[in-house]
Image (cartoon, rainbow, N blue to C red; front, top):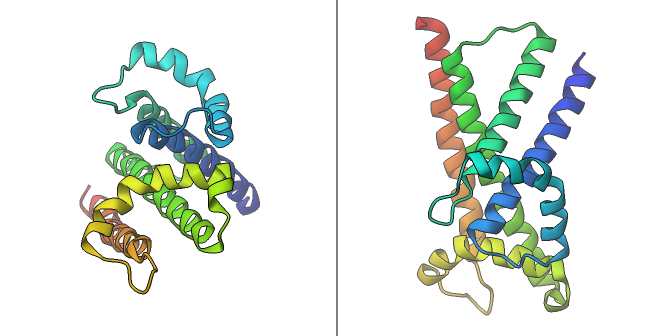
Length: 188
């Protein structure tokens, strides 16, 4: 059963990443005509276009994408728990869905920052359309750190500080989510 659960997790995680990448692309107002943007739009439009009629955006935030990602995470949790024969409380489901959306957003910013930094260090990033989209998505997160941490010897260390900050935040929040899950099983 575990190999099938592994495949289910992978497919769901990849699609959740695409949905949340769409969310980030719109949040930072990245280049819509970039090939990676177009790929993302084509994979998410069939659900997001009708969903936006029900759930409007607000202040430049695409709420429909967040709801869509949360729904896909909820479906993933349901399928995996059904296959494992585990029942889970509604509070735990709510916490795991919220944590799943937030964790995947953090992971996405982490991956985009790492890939963007590697492409910039390898050179030729100015001619690669993928590098441009990674820069556009990660720049709003790196920029505040860059103001505080100056370049050292010509190297921009701000992506490294962002990566460390994301990993720290994930560990801090994961500890609290695990505590909540434990407490709900012990006392709920």
